[in-house]
Length: 170
Image 1 (cartoon, helix red, strand yellow):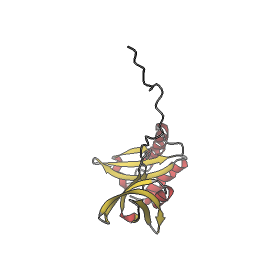
Image 2: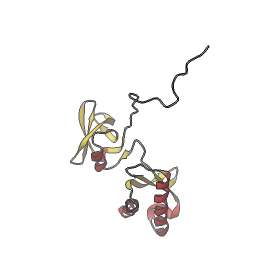
Image 3: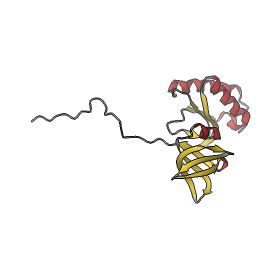
Image 4: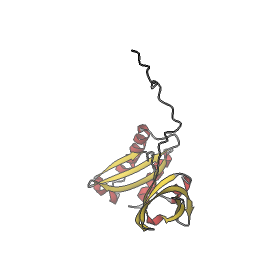
């Protein structure tokens, strides 16, 4: 995958006022998929994805000589990163310091391939995570995938309107 291609995609997304969380090409069920994850402070809706998709499609149509796309046999997916946002770069881990994350590794570290805990920060190409009361230092190049963890909090939630218990009459 050429850096030039990804840089153009990121430029299109940021030029439209969105954050480019991820842009990449991968094989999905035997077909190439151009996947773009976008975000913005107010969240993403279908119209945002449609806008970015239209601009990226135009770029792809005008630049058919992109070798990764195998003569047009690909599909484009533009979406929100979702509530359990994936983390790709050291900057992502730094940005979400203090948040809970799940990190999956490509090799064993301390006999494990998965760590879940609170992101403490980054240092010298490593992610520091507080996991089970201990700080773990994980090299970014050992991380196969990472994402934020969303926990539902049942405490303090109000009941939806109309959920009052009816009084039985006999």
